[in-house]
Every structure is written in structure tokens, then in C-alpha cells.
Amino acid sequence: MEKIFQLNSEQATEVLAKQLAQLVFQPCIIFLQGDLGAGKTTFVRYFIKSLNFQGFIKSPTYTLVETYELSQMTIYHYDLYRLKTAAELELIGIRDYFIKPAVHFIEWPEKGLQFLPNPDIIIQLAWLADHSRKIVMTANSALGTVLLTKIAEK
Ligand SMILES: Nc1ncnc2c1ncn2[C@@H]1O[C@H](COP(=O)(O)OP(=O)(O)OP(=O)(O)O)[C@@H](O)[C@H]1O
Ligand SMILES: [Mg+2]
Image (cartoon, rainbow, N blue to C red):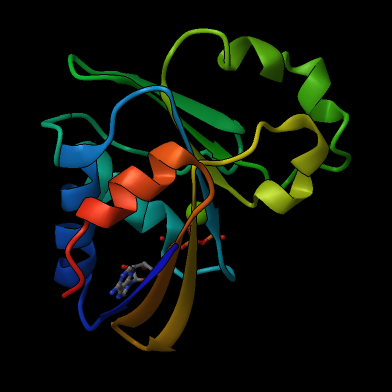
């Protein structure tokens, strides 16, 4: 199952991220794909903010993963862009991150596919114009299908 959105402003991205945040429950794995600057981190930021997180949400570009312990859920936000080999994921103990229930957002999953579990949802972002993005959400599990069914196409 697939849903397609054209988001003509950052605010539209915010609305969609918030919608997903209201529906999601752990464990859930979400891949984010798209070019540099497509809006992957921006989407995750709005998702986390909508759950009333007050702190600064930084891009995990250098740290590989940032953790958010929220009252509703634990969120792991990864950016694998800087991985040199997929095996580095083993070295940082990636397996341990998937033991307890959490919501995982993984940017650049293609850099570490062999060490990652299958995603429930794949979000592909593409640049259309300065403030306009196309988002394709694909369900890749029963949970993913349930979630996508509930997201309103706007
Ligand atoms: N509709 C929109 N949705 C999302 N981001 C938008 C939108 N319009 C403009 N932007 C801007 O596009 C940029 C997206 O940057 P972001 O860091 O989220 O990209 P990214 O996909 O995470 O890139 P990287 O692969 O480098 O991590 C931000 O500066 C954001 O403000
Ligand atoms: Mg990013």
C-alpha cells in the first residue's frame, strides 16, 4: 500500500508528521529516503516536536543516532549517511537498539540495510520546489498498512 502527498509548505510537512505521531505505536521502524536536503530530518523533527518534546532536536549526522525518551514512546533517530561500511553498525551495537520497543526513524537506511530489520513504513521524500516536497509513504508490514490506512491524504 502506498500514499502520496504533495506538501507545498513546511507547515504541510508538520501537519503530516503530527498525524503520523498521533497514530504510531512502538515497536515501529520507519525508513526515510531521499536526497540531501529532501526533508528527512525536518519530518522527524516535526514528529518529535508534536509529542511535546521541548529540547533541541539535532540531526544525528555526526552521532549516528539520537535518543528521545518521551512519555508516549522512545524514539531513535538515525542518520547513516556517514557510515563507511555497514559492518560499523554491528560495532556500535545496533542490535541492542532494537531490543526494547521503540519507534525508529532511519535516514539513509541504504547504507546499512544488511544490519537493519525490515521497516514497517518507507517514506520517500523528493524536492519539487523551494518549499514544496513530494512524499511517498509505502507500507511494508501489517502494522505499516494499518497506520497508512489511517493517514488522510490531503
Ligand atoms: N515542505 C517542506 N518539507 C520539509 N522540508 C522543507 C520543506 N520546505 C522547505 N524545507 C526545507 O528543506 C530543508 C530540508 O533539510 P533536512 O535537513 O530536513 O534534509 P534531509 O533530508 O534530512 O537531508 P540530509 O540527507 O542531509 O540529512 C530544510 O532546510 C527545510 O527547512
Ligand atoms: Mg537529515
